[in-house]
Image (cartoon, rainbow, N blue to C red; front, side):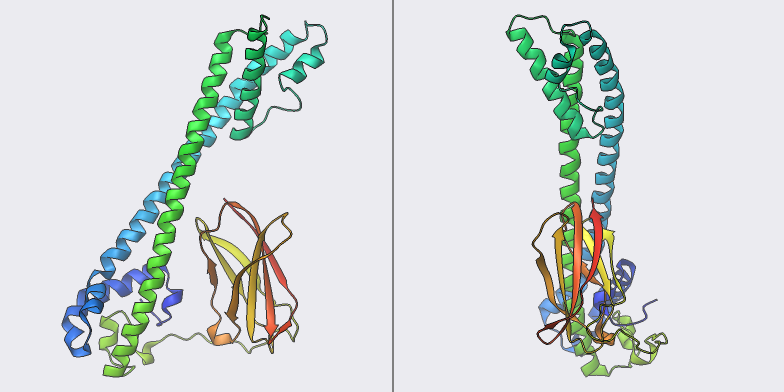
Length: 323
C-alpha cells in the first residue's frame, strides 16, 4: 500500500502500484482535471512503459549473471588443465641445461594465474615461446597438440569474457534506461499531483485512484529529536551500497548549521576527486538517499562534505567495490 507522495523515493513495486492506478483510471478523470492530450497519453501508457523497463532490466541482469558464472566456471576448469600441463613442462625443462632461463622464457615465474585475463596472457606468452622455437628450428619442449589445446582454451576464455562484458553493458544500459524513466515519470507525477490537488484539494479520496495518497492518510513515523553533530561535523552517517548493477546509493545525515552537502568520488589510488553533487539538501525533512547512476566497475571512494555557505565542514568517507 502506498504511504506517501515522495515519488523520488519510490521502490520499484511502489512505482508500479502508482502507475497501475494511474493508467487504469486516468480516462475517468482527465476531463475533470483539464489535462492536455500529451499528459493523458503519458498517463495512459505509464504502467506499460514502467513494466517493460522493469522486465528488461531484470532479464538483462540475469543474462549478465549467467554469462559471468559460466565464464568463472570455465576459468576454474582451464586453470586446472593449464596447471597440469605447466607441471609437465616444468619437469621436462629440468632436463635441459640452464632450466631456470628456459622456464623464464616460457613465463613461468610465480604461481599459475587464477584470473581469466591472467590465464589468457600466460597462454599467449607460452605460445609465443613455442612459435619462436619452431621458427628457429628448435624442438619445442611440448608438442603441438598440447599447445593447440591451450590456445583453444585461450580463445574460449577471450570469447566468454567478451560475451560477459557485452551482457554487463546491456544490463547497465537497461538499468540506466529504467532510471531515466523513473526520473521522467517522477516529474510527471509531481505535476499531475499538483493539478489534482488544485482541482480537488489535498485530501480527496479520488487522489488514491490516480496513485496518490490523500493528506490525512500519509504515514509519518515518529521522528526522534534532531541530535546532529555540531558544526563542522563530520556527519554521523555516510554509507555507500549497491542497489542495482552500476547504481550506488549514498545515505547521509546532517550537521548542525550546514546548508548543503557536497559529494565527490574517485577511484581508489587516484589523487583527484570528481564532483558528483554540490546541492545535497541538509534539512531533515528533505534528506533522502542519493543515487549515483552508471558507475563503472572499480573500487570507488566517496567523500561527503557538509557546507555552511562557503565554509567546508569535516568530510566523511565510504569505499565500495562496483563489479
